[in-house]
Image (tube, rainbow, N blue to C red; front, side, top):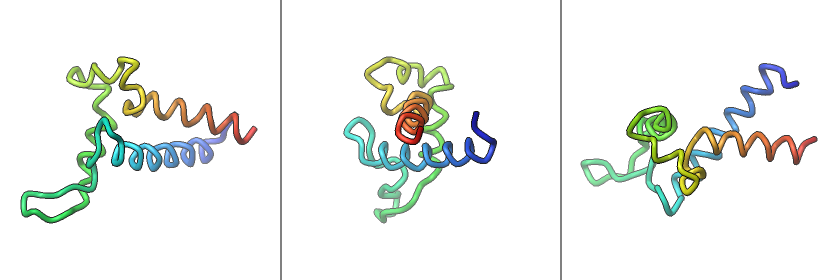
Length: 89
């Protein structure tokens, strides 16, 4: 079993990998680094948080379809942990 510290490290790693993936994904892109209302590229972590929690909202139900599992934070994190366990076991 994993200790709490190991689980937190895994979750942080999953969040970082997910943030990078959705930022450059063809399906999403420009989530947390985008042009703001002044025309300046800016960091917008609120969009990333919204993307992470959207599978739990009724409006994000479509993310549970298999075509969108790669941009669903829950399924991405499960796959990340499974791959981590396979690689580092």
